[in-house]
Length: 234
Image 1 (cartoon, rainbow, N blue to C red):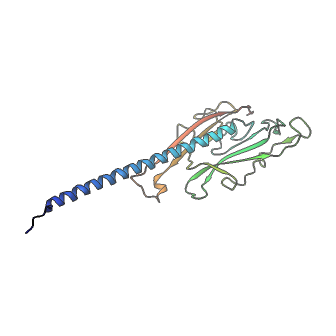
Image 2 (cartoon, rainbow, N blue to C red; image 1 turned 120 degrees about the vertical axis):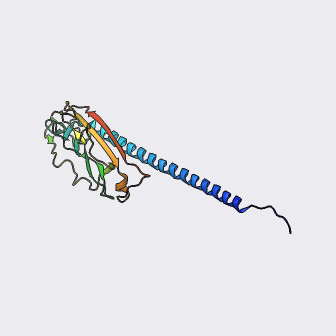
Image 3 (cartoon, rainbow, N blue to C red; image 1 turned 180 degrees about the vertical axis):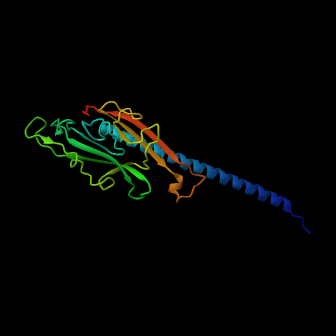
């Protein structure tokens, strides 16, 4: 008989046990790291989405010379309509003959690909002008019913600037755009608009209504009062 070095059954069982424990530990570490990575990605995506939408609204709204929605002291919720280079009081345009007349419309509608959540849309356009301007005959006057050439919010031509849009909770304003002096909005100046954007990603809604312990909801609200460069009348 030839003696050969080997392992006893107990040694093999211990080795298999240790290997299994290490494999399970590595799988758990990978799963946890992967879950946190996607959760952080989702958090950053929602926050960036809201911040970019707010920047788009602030950049355009600060140049407005006329606001059609919301009316002063009468918030409309999720609609914002304003024009640049149009007089607020008389509606004549252009105020400056050398600058274009543009309009902007922000509104919410179901997502075109997945109607279970809501998007914030941005529509914009330019109104043709000629050599006449306010005070020179013949004057042209703004018509809020026809100048905003949008058939319906969510229709073609708009840009989605924020997904998963929901109304803000108290003490924030329950409306997205407001010029209401009453609390909680406190917008006392007619040339200011309170913009409150809230994006909420719900894990159960995104996974067929089944709750997943590995996923958490993401909820982010950003509020800003935007003051116009050219004050409109109430």
